[in-house]
Amino acid sequence: MSELTIAVCPGSFDPVTNGHLDIIERAARIFDLVIVSVSRNSSKIPLFTIDERMQMLKESTSHIKNVEIDAFDGLLVKYAKRRNAQVIIRGLRAVSDFEYEFQMASMNHKLNDEIETLFMMTNNDYAYLRSSAVKEVASLGGCVRDLVPEIVLKELRHKFSNTVSTERGNYDE
Ligand code: PNS
View (cartoon, rainbow, N blue to C red):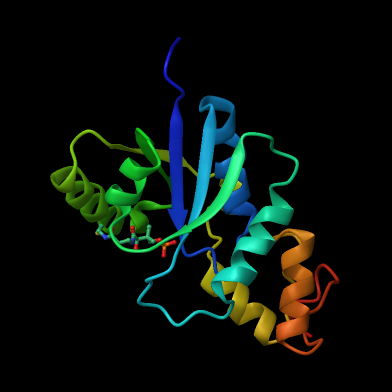
């Protein structure tokens, strides 16, 4: 029997965006199992708790059968090995991502050269999309409806006490 192909898709997911979902959906067409894993030890101050982020990921990926949502502590390569993953998937948006991603992939390769990092080009529609921009726009009452799954829109509205707009095209309100 051939071995299952397992990929880990790690990140902060604070919160998950349509750009993340696009990468997760495409990865799920290639691998038998995609483990989307939220990092517990991020240096960034998060808006959402780990549990909230996992719940939003669970709801927005419930239509994809071979996706599992998890969280991890410590080194990513150790976690990937423990989960029997052969591959780490990262989405690449623009040239500006490259330096950081290159450093991370090189470090991970140095730590464990049996785990490959694979980059997927982000869909053009989401090339500019980052969770931090979504949070900023939402906190200032701008419309993020086309950029995040429904559940995230709901949670953002909750966090920012209804300042989040749901109407398209009212960016200067
Ligand atoms: O969504 P992000 O914030 O760009 O994800 C970054 C993440 C979580 C993938 C990265 O910070 C990570 O892998 N952290 C775990 C610690 C680790 O393994 N560091 C060594 C590689 S530099």
